[in-house]
Image (tube, rainbow, N blue to C red; front, side, top):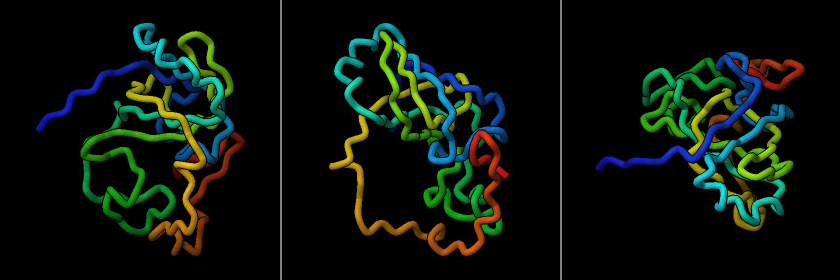
Amino acid sequence: MEVSLKVIGIIRSPFKEKDRTPIQGVYSDTPGTAEVYPEYAEGLVDLEGFSHVYLIYYFDRAEGASLKQKPFLDGSKERGIFATRHFNRPNPIGLSIVGLKAVRGNVLDISSVDVLDGTPLLDIKPYVAEFDRREGVRCGWYDALDDHSARVHTPEGLRRP
């Protein structure tokens, strides 16, 4: 089966290089925008009341696909790709939770950006705490990490080592 998706817009950020981009939005306070193409702008109606949204996007600069990858936060061991958030996936689809600061026509002003500038936007979904927050969460191999020294902190946020 083949699936076809439409690009609905583009994500803008100050990040031009993969190795200078935060690995997760929680480590970034960087502002950016998500520009929705005019033909999809009507879909933004009523979004301004949400504080956060999910951005679903295409990793257009991924370098192939792999079923095992060394995670950025634990480069000591390869892990199954589906147990990581690495971009070199069979389907290079990314997901970020960002702060929604404003809706200006077809442009979303966002914060906590962890995406390369010019990344194709596939979808936007509102973050709803009642639906999305879970209690008793386990985080697999990440929970077992004793040494988080692989984290690289910079003024702009956590970056890839």
